[in-house]
Image 1 (cartoon, rainbow, N blue to C red):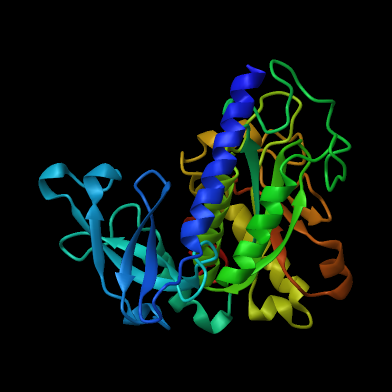
Image 2 (cartoon, rainbow, N blue to C red; image 1 turned 60 degrees about the horizontal axis):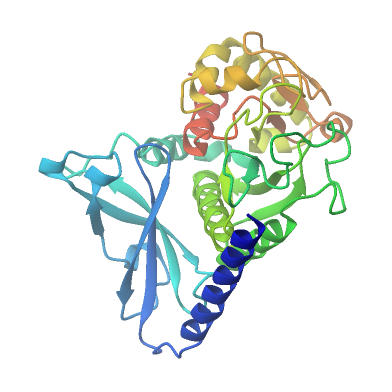
Length: 370
């Protein structure tokens, strides 16, 4: 097995070296590769590339394109074409130069959004609440999976478990941290592309990590988080490692993964804003069940494996909030309580949540009082 493994590694390194030779070839100045990125019907990410004869400065300059929706869970084969409407442009960290990544909405033949296009309604809701200036920050947790055995986390012993949790959170050292090269590459790729990445850290379970996006205004939080997820998958692909956003990857005494969502309005960020934050918590309490349904793609089933009241989570069934309480549904940071203004942290969203859905629901409840 060791010989086969070494042969595979040698082959992969050789392929990377060969690719580098071709990527070093001069690209004509008037030719740009634009990789269109979209969300499929099962919250997966898809991408394909077209050549442009100009350098786009905004999404409005880019042509509408299409794809086979019957192969992405978004249409029937008898009426397969789905349109790609560009909505955001990022620099491409993989191809470099003037090449671009283009985030797109998916639109059906009758010009209505596909059911999986949750950005469309989120954007409308953000416009309705624009006068309150909603800001967001999302803490995206995820786990890395072994390159040859995708059933086990990266760095875990075959057929067994690492030592108990404790030394891994924000850890340092080869016996505590697995996959830092991927994390560093992803961080730099996000910065290069224009994603508003705020930081990263190793998480409580070994091979579990977190990156943060924000603060972002309105719809840009969903755009940047989805692009950051795309970049993570794409970077990990180069390292021949897989990424999972499963909210409870390993059963038992191991932490699950969330996407804690930080939220504030202009009133919350100003002097006396703590009263606005507490009022928002009371509105969230009234709508707890509605939020739980929205906070993972399964309508709550995925989060039920994670929100057990253990491992720094709240109860699935009862809403709570408190200062510096990581076992509450919503945490008010200690600094916010001391200052008297700031933001709240909703700790309920699962790691595999759709940021458009979660952020839309927060605005509907807190800003529009729905």
